[in-house]
Image 1 (tube, rainbow, N blue to C red):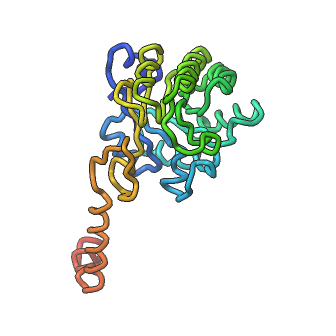
Image 2 (tube, helix red, strand yellow):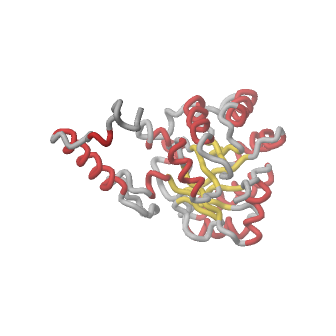
Length: 272
């Protein structure tokens, strides 16, 4: 698979080839993402909930994202690596925001970044793009604004929300974003954005009409049986499989059935 560059990703919009994107946080899973030829690996601020155990994405730091980006980068060759800009890494002074964006590329070895927001970040998107850092915009449900939005609610359910989403897509396209991620957007509104925008749209909980889809790797593998939102399809029950393996390991250790001689090293054997 040739390396997925920004021009190649945008070309998928015109050819009608769907874009695949997965949120990933470490080298081991990144190697699987690479082997499956997924287009984009996103180191998302969702790591705050999935990896760190927080109840939101808000505590995640720039250093957290950089650390996980570097880990994921080691597992990738051709898959495009994207870094999330965490809460308060870009909402402050312009100079600081651009410095943090640069750190994602220079230290995290990401190839692009993702920013949550609408018209209020358009100037920043333009400025970051002008210095050579590709930006994916993130509209609709914005987890970093969960307190303002009053929770994780589907967006676009009334005319005002619909117009806001359509306007955000237009403004961010004009600002130089190379793609738009739509989270938690009403099916019909997401379809309108996809049809009206020349940019590729990536959906999560926004229906099938987007140009591509993104989900968290841990979710599609079924690692958390307690997390079963409507928009997630579990392709594997890895929780049950992993639990079975751990229970078997525990039993064999307790009963003295592991390790056996074949797992040991001896002067008489070939393992030395």
